[in-house]
Length: 232
Image (tube, rainbow, N blue to C red; front, side, top):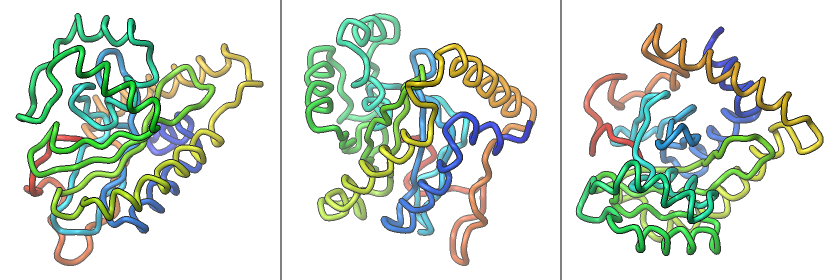
């Protein structure tokens, strides 16, 4: 099954259009991610047109507590569920800014639930900021959308612009997914089939949804990207 088709079945037909619109408006990389066990898994991405940009392979998994999308996903869980994950995974620091105490994480998630947005300020990668929001839908899987880029560009002004655009994007993505009137069994069967095909495709080909061909002056796919390949 082509991975593009799998992603459409998993997150709705408008997913790539929504990510492309975020990049067109903000000029930074847009990501869509889901909760996968005790990790965050990236299922779609549209890269920034800038030569210096963030890039994460679709299918890559990362820690929840140190990533913007990860904390957005954690905010959709209850505090006891979060504590269970922390007990299993710990809170290893990715940078000097990473949250490493359970109490601080629970407090941060409370703020995220109140505000509906996550600002990841160099917590996963030094020199990188991320703005993320949860996607709330009837699907039995947590999901989040984000933009990320170098801190020098993702400043207060861009964050102010990004928040309403990400909030609107999350709402649009939620509307494109199966709604509450659809049976939970149908949702779970569709999701399970899509995820199985997704993981099979990644294992077979080593890649997923291909980003657009880089514009002139950008780094070719697979080359070094500043500030680094780790995800936010």
